[in-house]
Length: 499
Image (tube, rainbow, N blue to C red; front, side):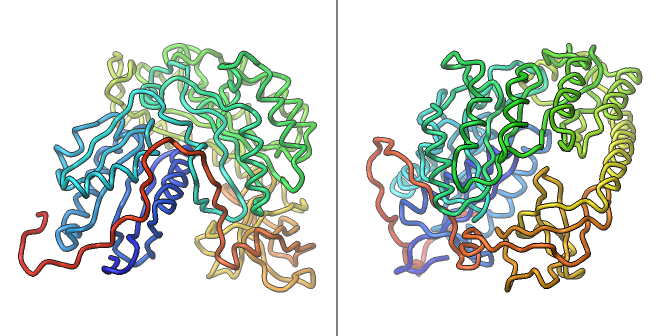
């Protein structure tokens, strides 16, 4: 905890998707603009923010379990504040302070910009502040952000979703799709590149429906091509597209724009047409596979990843076999696989045919076995291939033990490499670029144990070494100025703490 003279400190704990990760960067930027400083890893923060997810069934248990662990910490540090935001906060609203009355602030997905004011109000009024808006207060990317990475940055191009998938609670929590203007997006990308960032990932709940709000169905392909004109931007990725909106112009833009990576994450969810219909996914397996074929025809080296749900209500063994057939035909480089999670408030939660846990688990294990075999086969085919790797931080759990470093190839594959050879120009840092040759392919990664072919030091690497992270500015929300928060009060000699 900070002392009487020190600025108040904060820590953010993030759960869920890339959108939540990016929202947490915005929350960090807001708090730092308001005078807070990030707490050290071993420190007890003055403000702890939980940025939550509501997609999985255990999301509630995970949040309340973590809040329970903080209760005795707060009892020892009465000036600590706890805030809960994100999708679960949007869903549960006042329920959070009922179940965990030691929480100080609850805010939703539509008003993350209010956090500093809510913390100030809760501290002044000595009571919990709950503010959940039904519509977006301001586009999140208009807010300041403290970026986590010196070399890679998230850029939201839209928020919300117009789809009605029966298993998904996100549209009710994030709202209808709202698109940013292309000039705003490109300005943010340029600002990141000016800070030394080499790679951006364009984000949206349904990223390739971008343009629906201003009536341009080709807007996303145009945006990819426009990113190709930004000097110094070496890699462009995007996630996640929806197969129903995937158009040929996007494939052409990917293939023809040099800095757009040949990587595609496109959720399948199920290979059964019957289940896809029940999920209200407006494509069928034939359409999905045709997109895969077109992508590989234009970019034979493309790495394609996906999301798959096992055990959707009413799924039969025949339906599951259809999923395995599509997995084998698609040859995904990897897949994010999920056991169906019943979420109150979704149509699927009320459907007949909810499957027993043991049936879902057994199918899930079979799916993993098939996908790992496909992934391993593909990765073994890459042995001997020369790859460009953007060095990252903390990707390999055994890097210290094996003396390797790690990074991502242009197609998104994880590469563990030996930082050796005459090409090494002083120390290799996260954010630097190396070229190496694959010596071994495992199901989930590649090894490159020979000497490096090239090593290019970058501004991103310089910034990582100096401990500098990009911080992008936002526009005013028209809210009162917050200023620096008051320092923590000196502990009282008598009084009671939260129990």
